[in-house]
Amino acid sequence: MQLGESNWRQVPDLTGKVVVAPIGSFEQHGHHLPLLTDSLIGGEVALRAEEALGEEAVFLPMLWLGASDHHRSFPGTISLSSQTYTNVLKELIDSLIGSGFRRIFLLNSHAGNIVPAQMAINEKNIEYRQELPNLYLAFVSWFDLLPKDELAALTPSLQQTQISHACEWETSVLQVTSPDLVGPDRPSTRRTFESPYWSADFRKPSRVFIGRALEQSSPTGALGYPERADPEKGEALLRIATREVVAFVRDFATWPDTLGPETLESQP
Image 1: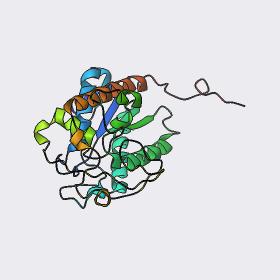
Image 2: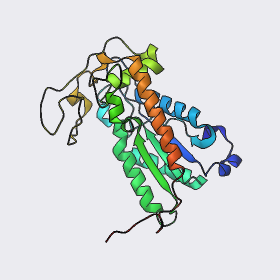
Image 3: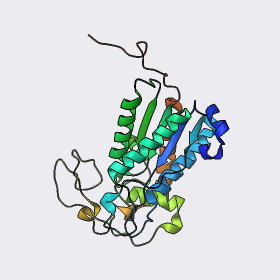
């Protein structure tokens, strides 16, 4: 159910539920995908999860503006700085807490939001930890919820074992949700530089994080294997992501109100 479709007098009866806040971005996605790609994908996952959960959880609309400064050299990108975005999320969390919600879940669809969102959650947890011991603040990106063994077994198979940008994954999903917005011209970039610490392609994870703006990594704005996109892959990714989001929300709703002595065990 959508929180925005309730009136203010109904809200106190909803605060015992998990509230899900989908967060996305408005940024370039290569030659072939729209600026709202992340928000469209995250919005679809949230919509499917909402349909599955019904009145078990409360959903906010997609927050389409994210932290995308590393894309700003490409026209059309609209971004908040990381610090501003952290503050936006902190105030969103404050508003939900002030309304009485105690289980707040940020469902993310853009990698650039990860660090500022985690900072927002950590800072708010520290602020409220004494006053509200029953407060839980959760964050995950839909693409990080997907079981790796299940992805490896998909048919047709994925070339990429992880998401990149305007890639096989995102293009496949948009072929399902917004096929009219997917262009035929799909030039992309794959790194040829090899290191045991920083992956040269997107078929295995890197062991270290390297800060790079998108134009430093890809003149087209796309990374990975968009030419391998297929709507069957997109539907599989959406199905698995939705299942995992729904499972987490249901599990999250059962967590104990406080982590007291009965839920913690000290070891010698």
